Image (cartoon, rainbow, N blue to C red; front, side, top):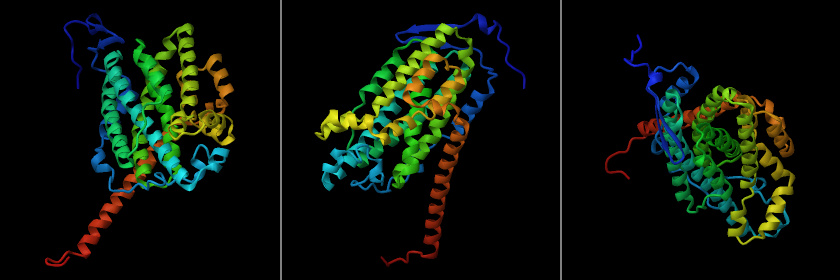
Amino acid sequence: MGKKSFVVPVDKTGWKLQDGSGAVQFSWEYDSSREKLLNLYDKGKRRQWDAKVRIDWDLEIDHDNPLGSSDEMIPLFGSPIWSSLSQNDKVELRRHIVAWQFSQFLHGEQGALICASKIVQTVPELDAKYYAATQVFDEARHMEVYSTYLDKLGLAYPINLNLKSLLEDVLTDSRWDMTYLGMQVLIEGLALAAFGLIRNFTTNELGRTITAYVMQDEARHVAFGRNALKDFYPQLSSKERQEREEFAAEACLSMRDRFLSEEVWDTLGYDVAECVKWMKESPGQVQFRSFLFMRIVPILKDIGLWGPTIKESFEKMGVIGFADTNIDELMKDDEAQAEEFDRKRISQVEDAIDAAKTDPIVPGQH
């Protein structure tokens, strides 16, 4: 198949409009050669799903332990405050922790929706606009999923101030690549690690199913940012890369503090300072917050933001060891686990159909 021929070369007809947060860029170069991004776009189209169909919303939530987690998964487990709580207090704490977690996921998905729509406007290449358009729909679906889950749980929290601050920085920066860096790499990279803990270490079927399906989408989103920035960052000056390193280092510190859960301790009337002190000093909680950067560290290295500033910051945070993590294998596992949930769901539906065939309802019988 031949290619279209414009009567005026496309590089002479560019169109850029300036709005409050950056330039809206139109591209007339419709024949892209970036195979990786076009492949992601194709996968994004094929992987669309309906949350009302793919998820069994009749699955129950145990309000005493919504995710079916062990006590060790509670941030205050082992602390003097935990020891002083009654059984009813612990039940209330479990519910609030899950409500807080899933509320931040919900708010983060809305942030991602707005960031993806901004990328459609501001990124210069059309193949990136194509893929970002599929992500806009993904994020709207994720918002539907988490909002519906929180309706079943019956409890929700406002946006965490650290997450709000980072989203504000990302959305008000006029440089299109900063939207990728802040959302696709940092916020969604951290979310994937948090999602993985829920998928792998909890027992509630609804919570695990939701998480596995959202992770399948988010793995594509992180790959999108990674591929786009890996092409772009080598073109920047050392000063420009340094600015992005400093932003990433500060953002990672802010996101680590986001998981101190101060809003929960305040809502429940606990001593917030004592809870935060425990969160910062408990070996288990330090390890948990370090684990959250398992995907961010190797991606920043891969896209070329790996100078002294970011390496020194990660050394101090104790996460530099993740630099050689095989991110591609993690993404493949995200795909495989979602497909396994699908196989299980389809098998259950088929079993129900077979049971109905072998035990037909006779008219007049109840």
